[in-house]
Image (spheres, rainbow, N blue to C red):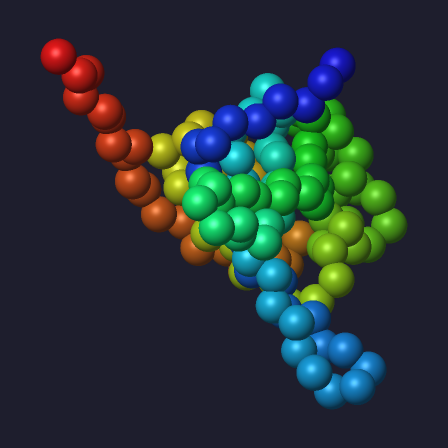
Length: 127
C-alpha cells in the first residue's frame, strides 16, 4: 500500500537536537492528513528561481499505518520516543479524530504534547 498525504496540516512537531560541537538544530515538522493513522513530514523550500512559483521539498520523517503499527512501535524497546532524537514538542489539532489517539500514545511515551481544537476553514465556491 502506498502512503498518500494531502496538504492539510493536522498538527506540528518541533525537534531540537544538540550537536557535539555545541550548536542546536531545530526542525519544524508537520502532521499531514493521509491514508495512514499518522504521517509526519518535513517541508523545506527549494531555491526560488526568478519568475517561477516557490517549490518545496517534502521528506517523510515518520508514519504509523494503523493502531496495530502504533502499538508495536510503542511496545518496542525505548517506546515511541526512540524513533526521534532530541527534545520533542508536538501540537495536535484534536478536530482530527486520529490525533486523539496520537495524543494518548505520545503523552504516555513522555513526549510533550499540546492539544488544541480548530476547525478547518471552508472555501467558498467561486461563481
